[in-house]
Image (cartoon, rainbow, N blue to C red; front, side, top):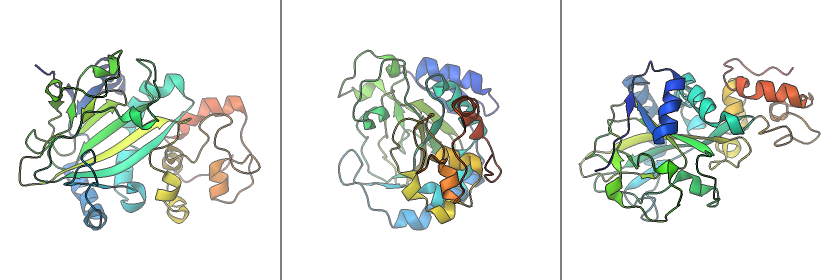
Length: 297
């Protein structure tokens, strides 16, 4: 019998959430955002969702629509991207093998009525199927429930504990998976190495989730945040969110611009140079939490 994902409350300490994530590969945080927030995000994104085509193959889903560029398109979604509980959990989960982490993708996923279950897969396969060692996580994903997630509506299915499998099978028995059932405003947090997939929607309503992923700062992002969010919008965002999007170096010598400028100095056409190595390592992840506009040091 498949084991279900554990659920913790919104007030749970990030250290405890990270412990469950390390043990199980996934965890549900119940009611972390207000249902009204999820409704607002859906309202802001509806025009873009309406213009989005269904998937072109079985994996993407012929009755599933995936709308990206959420940071540019939805002011309200930025609160989810930079949610302090999520950021602290990601930092605890990835921070031992990176100077900093970044947003990997933002995507609203609408699973329509009649959509069959998606193939069980690992998100980390997007990194060209690189064989990361067991226990080494390259990314952390989140799936926020913009509607209730029920088994019948196509709740995301997870194979609890599969992040610890030594082998990397191309096919996994769906019977090993269980649905991440949760209420609107809850979020499923999962590691990139866990086997999972969208569930089958056997109802007549749409299941809408908001998928926000985070990856190591020295990996290429799945969604190109610099093109997805135009500079004129990026310049209006707080420093921490810009850093999450990739407007900071991924390590000491990764991601500087032209004459060794910091990415945000390029964005604002300033001439400040890169800070030194030790200062960068101390401050990079701390900078992700800043909510004020960027000011060069």
